[in-house]
Image (cartoon, rainbow, N blue to C red; front, top):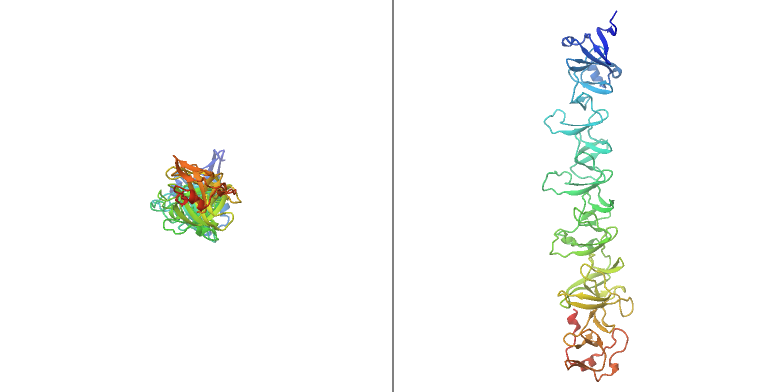
Length: 557
């Protein structure tokens, strides 16, 4: 009778101990060295190895029920082995224990913390020998310990991911044909057989960007060199890229990136400065530069935007913006003038499609309108209930504009005033303007839209018993009283305040007679209401005048 708890079977003696089976006998199939062991621990488990028919034949196990058969794990001289029911040690296969798979090598020993190649695929086992599944490993490539460590991912089967996109915790990662996790620019071609590689060129449908952790950028910005350019190339330019929820780089126009509009070229690069749509396919490019001869008027049939610099690249919209012309923008400096442009709510820069008038632009210098600039195109536009003038390139006009020829009733000929360079709104009524010396001059511009007085146009003639010429108040300068002419047809007697005189008296200064109107009939002064009230004709003016007349052309160009 056997001792309690012991039994014999096939030359093996077993005893239960803390859930394990202690093997005291020795199998016929084990080596002589193995037979010298007095105590051998065994784990009872199912074998979960999946091998090819060739591997099974190599093991001499030509049975189809291999995956369901039982195996035995045994420790011999400190190393674990897996044995079949005949007592033969398995080699170069995976064996299972407690739901995990372990690999035994050429010598039958359990493999730990190593790469494993099995049935043409690569795996990795951890320090306990268990096959890694659904997890990462930072290590050197298989059979090349001298190489840099790389990140690898092992799928649910334990196979190393190759030429694949893997989704892990909601993020996408890419692995090349060697299983290396890629960072930076990545090409993923999923048509037919998947192909993953570092991107050398940009393809809006196949090119992605992964950060330093390997995660694909989605709904986010990246500043990088172009695909195919090394990051450490000190001479390489960097650009901003935006990646959509799909991971694809944005191209063309994006109207709602955190509420802002951005423009990108066909290579996904965010565009800055002056940007224009170049064709009907919504292709955009930066325009201008030192060598550019093109003006904004060249793009009036398309879309033009202003997108600031690389750190402020969104398209400006629904606002006025002051900047350099496109051909001066890249070489912007204080020697070049900046101009105001109006940008609508969609980000489009206003460029007139038609011209309303032609004329000249002036500044008030030394009491005269000087710095004459010919304007071949003038367009009137209302912005926020105020009237503005623009040239053909969408530049807001300022200072004095003399409209000499108009094609619309809404824009009568005459002199207009639009304030300084940072104002630009059309002025009406009484205005005080300083010249370059700081001296002040009074003007009056029409407030009505009909009759002899036109809205915005400088008054010429009598306004509230003051004499104006193209908006400028004419005053006696050299003397207390002088005669001023308007168009050499109408003549007025004015004092130093510009007030029109119409009495038949002597006009004196320090007892000197300047103008003698005593012999004039009251009717010599026009009584017609309007711009020429209290004027006299040329012959009368010549007869009564004793001093120099005011030459309005000396005041106004």
